[in-house]
Image (cartoon, rainbow, N blue to C red; front, side):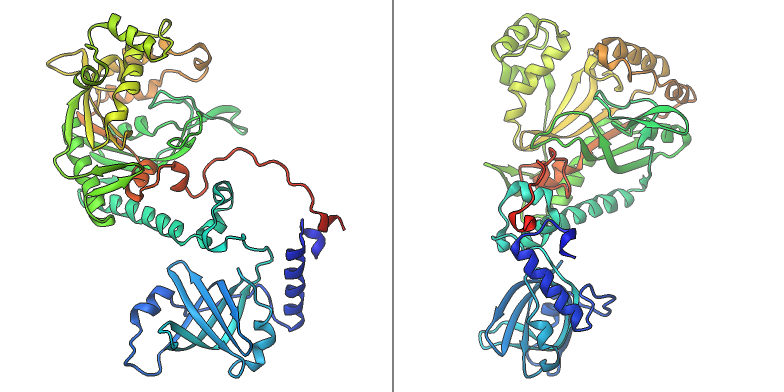
Length: 495
């Protein structure tokens, strides 16, 4: 059996124990184990005044203290830990098995509940069950796995070696559940739209390309679900949302993963002001329900989520932090050069936005709605009726990063067609292979799409804020990583 593994001496020792368990006519990988209770549930219901309380738990061995005829085991499940007390006197028939247990093994146990002399709640085990043998030695710092790279690559270790990681991902699940409940209580329908699309659309980003063999066509992993969700507005679904994956063939950073979770919302007969109110109400509700107080620490900053949130125009913020008037492109290009931006070959609006990102974003710590963007940056957005140079768009910044993006949606098919054409002509040459006109979407608009507000929220970044971690990898169970260098055979394996 050992030859199946790239083994070291510790693994070989564990494999030998596994064989001994088999020789006891016990399956080292167990089977169905019913009627178990979580450690947290046992702790919550225990009453010192009651007699004959029993418990039946299952989990992983994370601490093993052998003091001769008595062994104490700390068992961890998804809810927390509980202590097991194993006495040779009570478990003589199973003692040979128990002595073969290792850190990391998964076992089941049942017995009477009681307190030790130090007041520790303990299951005094009357029967133990082997459920899965761990044949790899747990990390040396088992109770605080610190190797960041190892944690991301082997999340299956990270989750049980670091209880706070388990709690963070449980919190993420609860946050998303609360978002769903919030929207469903307001009569939004949750829908699913295609992940593979014939045309890469809905946002300006480089897609991943794949090939469908049966149809012999290239397809694109979706950049955004926007154009499909708007088709549903045309079809009469007046309030829709989707929480699902988007894929963008771009770089890795503490704030970017090529595969990420996005929520998009569309509401007929609304505009970006309605989306602003909805966003503020929703995130404040999440903070109240899942965090302690309205002031949360994020990195070196403390963020105050108290309402109302600041709303400021794009042009005013550019003036405040870059010292440039949005209409003075000469001064903006001069500022861009001073920031190291190679602006000479870029369109004016791109230069303006690059300067904005370099000078303004780093100052937006508390929740801030940046409203009324230059219209040319927003091909899917309605222009302001009072000043068509600006679009009815906002981006929400919290903790110096963009969290949400929203529009008053464009529903004029001719204007949308013209914007698509301009976008395609403005694309880089290597992007023209995938930037094609979505004629079916234009056709849908010709049937009439109601005026609407649309919103996109980056779920991963939102969870980062609400859990206080500054790397997106810490809120994605399996983030994309560079390939690991090939492992060299161990000296023990070579022997």
